[in-house]
Amino acid sequence: MTENSNHEGREKMKEAIRLRQSRREQWEKEGERPVWRNLSMVGALGWLIVTPTLLGVMIGRWIDGRFDTGVFFSGSLTFLGVSLGFYLAWKRMNEE
Image (cartoon, rainbow, N blue to C red; front, side, top):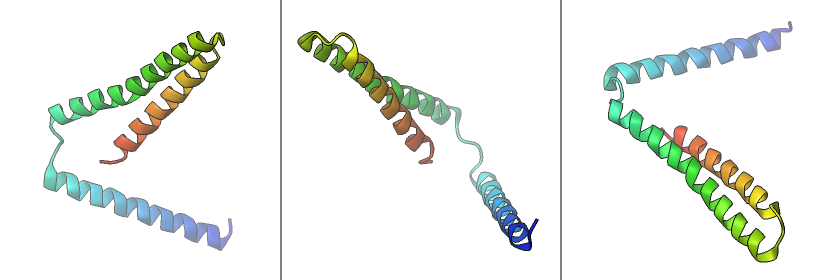
């Protein structure tokens, strides 16, 4: 191991310790989040994933029926909807 990589490792460890301490201080000051808030987060994440997925399925089936393309648009837009839903859920989880 070189001296430089050892120094970088120490800096990363110090930053992780500072982050852990600040989170601990925040928890001691504010306490646990209420159960209702955690449950509402779960519900919101579910809707953030389900809604774009269902929209992708419905729009894809409509386009496939209109242009007789099999399941080309249904599959593509379902995948796009799922991807968008998980992206929105990820952003929402990291917001708080």
